[in-house]
Image (cartoon, helix red, strand yellow):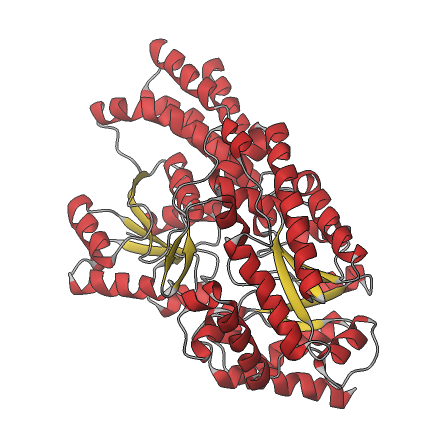
Length: 213
Length: 337
């Protein structure tokens, strides 16, 4: 691994947002290709963050600051990636369903997906079914991610899937769901294509959904 | 045997007619007596009536003043939005800049509108069922309270980036929680429950530094006044269970993700575990047969000091027959012993 890529990789694992942004700029100035920096520093570092999370070495605080540091670097790379025509491995629309304002889990999933090489369009929290429908029409994503933390808002996942069906958009994208009260059984029951119980697994599930497409 | 006797005997591991049922019902209880959730958390009389109704209808063994996480935070001055049938929500943290901590005015449980309403709930419980049913007051853990004031997101970064500053905030929070716990014990609480939800998302080392010492101080203040303590951390607490034992809690709630069998095997009779039927997949979405099996399984695993309960709040919309299945399971355990 190029020395500067290694420095960026370690900066992400340490959650050092400022250093990562500076080092990504150094790498770009040195002539490294943006997609090289993305794949060989940002994505690999976030893969390692996911591995450490699954192994019980990292927890939400460490994952959160690592993801934030990664985003600092990604912000610099994004315009150049677009300019060079480098495509993301898939496009994901993500949001917490209507009536639910919890966004920590959803944000983490969004950041981990970005760190996994996906383009993520985050619709925020308390997202109405019609807003999801409009966003799917506009952005044509590969995956729609629905999050809910409350048992009282879980049924909004069903309303959102129904709204997509009624709009004739359900087959355009895979739907994956998650959140504290959501189970794999519930995901199957409501007709979702994928379920993940944490942000690290969400990346793996999203990758497998892309392969199925 | 009344509920208080049943609970006290069970806590000592003595024979009972059935294991006590400590299910947490809030939205369900409000709706059960025909009130919106907002009335439940705004008006202690509704909270008390709702608790007493579900207590009788579903053979519960506790009345509880828990309602929402923002009692203390609202009295600190956090802007909280209330709506008719949703939990209170906050959109902007009270502590955004680090210096904001200097402007914090710790609320008084006797005069803070939301905290004093909870104290009044406990007082009314005491009037209505004192000495017959265990009365549980409720406080936030210091770390949970810091997250209420600062947002979960910022608190998560504080844990890694500014530990000393966070400890200053925790010191302010813990003193408020101790005063709040004392006020509820004075009003007649037999048990003080403490919720420290964020603790399941952090490492054991962080738990030992930023959550446990404050839980210990709150519980120690409660014990000094002669009341009991219950520790409730939502989520998978498997990796911090042995540390939670050090909190001094008399009862440790286990959420449904924790393996109650392993927990009980590991910690034996050092503490009374409460749990841990899945509140959504079993209680709300399961059949009465599934509820019956799960309830019996948890009590078999938990041993002679364990208390029955779902892992966390039982959601609104849970079929009434599932509560009755729970009661049957608990009665049958006793008759087979």
